[in-house]
Amino acid sequence: MSAPISARDKNAQYTLLTNYETLLSRVEHMHELANGEQWAELIDQRTSYVMLVDQLRELDTTVVLDAAAQQRKAELLERILEHDVEIRRRLVARRDELGKLIGVSQRQRDLHRAYAPQQGAPVADDADSTRSS
Image (cartoon, rainbow, N blue to C red; front, side, top):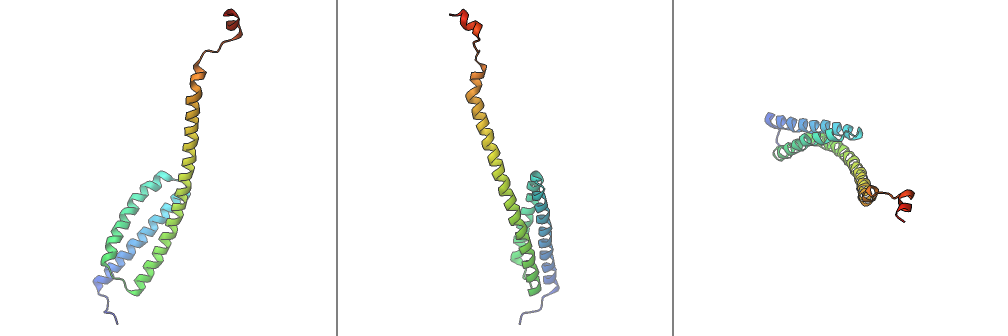
């Protein structure tokens, strides 16, 4: 049988679970941003998300959870990961879209470089060609 959890340990569990709930809230917001194609704001949010993940990683190593807290943490992690997978899917689609746009832009630039010198050359009209003959 395990030893009873002290008040200090309960407080640490509460803090850890609260941080996981905060992380879930952040990732839900980031998911909404990805769905709304608000890419710049999504990238801005990612910084605070990564910082919170780092804090959780440290806290996770020091806090021992009871069975109920472990179950709650597992539920929160599952929901966090579901959102994370969907955000990543949207980001990959965006990356592919941008890659296509870059490819089109490069082809247009290459065509412009290839044909622009010809556009600047004087075009001989019929009057000029008859005079020089």
